[in-house]
Image 1 (cartoon, rainbow, N blue to C red):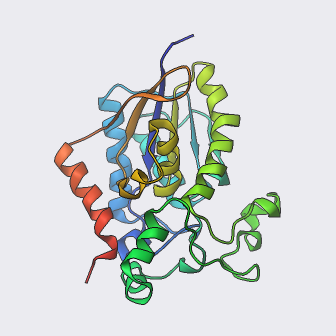
Image 2 (cartoon, one colour; image 1 turned 120 degrees about the horizontal axis):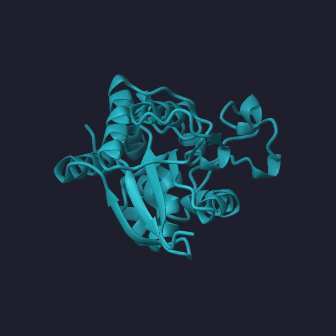
Length: 251
């Protein structure tokens, strides 16, 4: 058995609502043309780095699924097993879903919106169970215990649901020597990054994950990162990170 284990995290490519600067959450929106290009470029970068995978995981939201398909097609690994699970979904943004981020700042204030977007323990206002945004009204969650379905989530809530899936499903595959790719969302992956990289509740506020950039991990036997890095041009990666930071500052 290998003493070090390979994991790659990939945030989906740009979605239609990323482009429109809207809170997306569990709403199911498609990739833009740029997002599809980012997914293929992620595959190219992984192939160029000599990375291979034995299995992959993604959410049940189209933007992540399509990113996985396109990246696997590029590395010629469309045949590997793929598992979709709701526990890898984006954070549920509650009543903010579908609203413009800049407008939210005007309405609630920059500090409040930053707490909702980037903070650890502050959930946005919830939706009611009669809302179309309540997952219990979506057939893809018909088999999920209603007690597990959110009306809104903080990053702390997301971390709890992601870690349950990580520990119960993904870690056993890593322990068996499998090379794993996870394609998911900004907040579900930020939550996992907190765990892997021992990022504090305070420091996670300033961690922004760019779309379409693979993050490669080498894990030890305690399933913590001993090495992590983004693939690609450093200046381009920093530019994309800064673009995420500025989403609530647009005129």
